Image 1 (cartoon, rainbow, N blue to C red):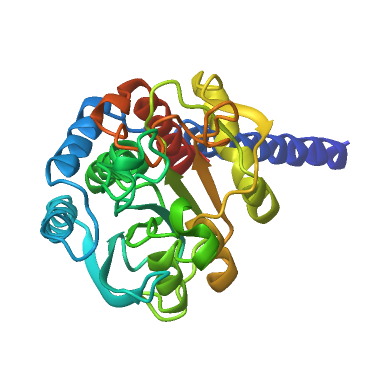
Image 2: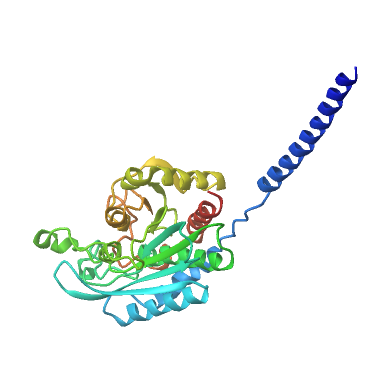
Amino acid sequence: MLQINSIKTSFTLLSALLLISCKQANTQSITKSNTAIIVPEFNADSAYRYTAEQVAFGPRVPNTKAHQECGNYFTETFRRFGADVTEQNATLYTYKRYAIQAKNIIASFNADSKNRILLCAHWDTRPFADHDADPANYLTAIDGANDGAGACGILLEIARLIGQQLPPDKGIDIIFFDAEDWGTPEFEQAQYGSTGWCLGSEYWAKNPHTPNYTAQFGILLDMASAENARFHKEYFSQQYAKHIVDKVWNAALTLGYDNFFINQPGVPIEDDHRKIFHYRHIPCIDIIQYKPDSPSGCFGDYWHTVDDNMQTVSRETMKAVGQTLLYTLYKL
């Protein structure tokens, strides 16, 4: 009888201890799961302003005053946001073997973290309006409001927000690649062939600002700010980093931006993300406008024409892209 009571008493005490222990464990779990990760609110007016400020310098073609002044503007702005900034200067050569002074600009947040994510865009503008309806404009440098400046404007706003609130346990590198848009123009294609694209990203990928640089993944923005832009799942992005494509498109769906991020395959695009994957083996995706019914067969009607000015830029599109990127960084 005493033995049974003793067992019962021991069992009762053990049960009570286990219950307390479970309650404590459950409380810790609930506390952890309820820890709110706040995604910053993307300000499209701010991104639009950064875009307009770039365009105000004039076409940012390497070897010009506008290019030099805009590069200084980026460096000063990134530093104001609290980033560690590296300017990577290089002499690169165009399809005609013409020497240009290029500058990749790298802004690093939480530089000591090994868990890095790469965001990037190109900041130079095309020296030729070779898709313009008027052949008299072929040798005119374009404003590149959407093809260059808009993507940089989105990333500048993201840099501002990251400077105020870092994503948990992450280091972020934002790279503005130079000399992306000096590929062979249409009117000289037969003579020179299709060469000269993505010079700045290729240089960085072969000579990263940090030895043996790597990142979990990369996201490239290109032509990401035009009105009514639609972003399909670019072919090489699907090949290199389908899991990242899925994360970003699912984030857009969650936020209600699936009318911008179309759940359909896109075409192969030769862009900076290919250099990043080929030379650095970083899975990188390209968020880029796809418009198959345009004269170019891929991009907007303004593409590589004198019409790529601030009239093409949409705050609504910038909001969709910027908020989706922030959600991906902070939640996923």
